[in-house]
Image (cartoon, rainbow, N blue to C red; front, side, top):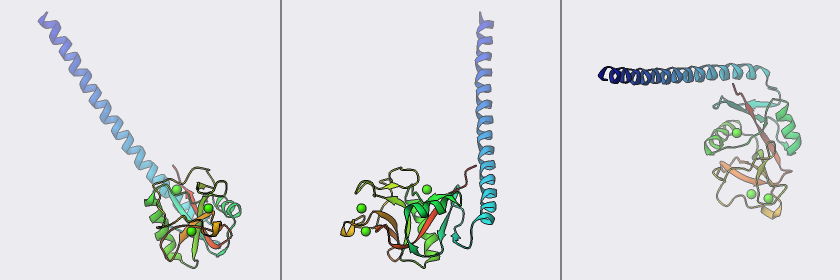
Length: 189
Ligand SMILES: [Ca+2]
Ligand SMILES: [Ca+2]
Ligand SMILES: [Ca+2]
């Protein structure tokens, strides 16, 4: 009986050891996958830098798995036309997920300047007060914060969204304002 108990104990110990080894192997694989993914994104970034239309866009550094482009010429904004131009660069008008992305894009456009406003994909064209992103149709997250007092739908005529350069933050603007616009280019692995 003792003998049998020992064997059962040994078996349990062996199973636990196997489980721990498996966990450690899984963890190493995850780490490796992560490293490969990061290297791949960096490669894609190098390729993208060569492919971008540099006549019409300024480009940002790499931010996680994406980069941003700002149109070079300030002109009358047109949501569809601007998003189409972003699509031609394998992207879409910026869709901010959180304030960390907001701050990155803000620091990017601060270096560029040359416009009062930098438009992104948010708009409340379909339903006043309900801001959604043009490309995905997803709502602008509540955790993305606007400038104090914005969006204010000034003169009941502000249905687009952009960075107010002088005030360093997000504001709702007229959809036909003269702006530069900003594209987001995903570089997923
Ligand atoms: Ca985004
Ligand atoms: Ca509005
Ligand atoms: Ca406003």
